[in-house]
Amino acid sequence: MRDFLDPDVRAYLAVLAGPPDSFLDTVYRRSKADGVPAIDPEAARLLRLLARMVAARRVLEIGTGYGYSALNLASGMDDGGLIFTIEFRQARADIAREHFAQAGLADRVTVMIGDARRLVHKVAGPFDLILVDAGKQLLEPLHDRTVALLRPGGVLVTDNILWDGDVIPGFNPEPHHDRESTEAVVAHGRRLAADARLDTVCLPVGDGLALSIRRGE
Image (cartoon, rainbow, N blue to C red):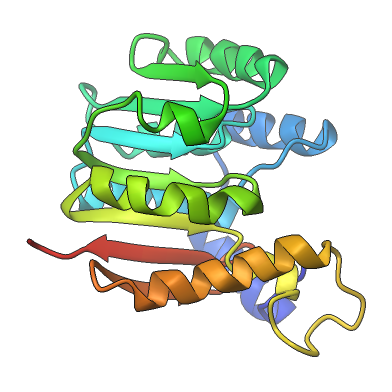
């Protein structure tokens, strides 16, 4: 992952953040060791804060992985909060369920397995917070449905909006991702910025996060 921050600045911010939670750190390291996508720890801390800020009680996540993001979101929610998370791969979903059980969250996290383009129509809103961390070709097909599921004042979080710097012309002389996926990320970033239903800001946190607030009706 391309580092958008000066290393000294990143080191200073890491000191301010304090030591990581041991269980969350274990899940993150296991994800990285197995080549399973996991949101950057800095972005994960932001997710916890956002969940607290919006007093999230119902959260939808698209792209479970090993459960690292959902675990961070849950840590920012009240005990009665619920998370619905969608994962395409059965093996990853099984491991995520193990992690949720170990964290005492088995009754609060529902893991749905299959194609997110179909499953997003199986859940009912409104949601207080939605995290989209899915395959880049799914961003556009999922967009209208995820916005519709979000309550007014709720937050839509889209990960990888900077796509390791590949979306910035000349920033990465040797792009890490295929052209089709890069173009999909660029197009979706523009879609988020232009969507009149949303107020959006993009942050150079992790691999880039877009934070969008659903405007009132």
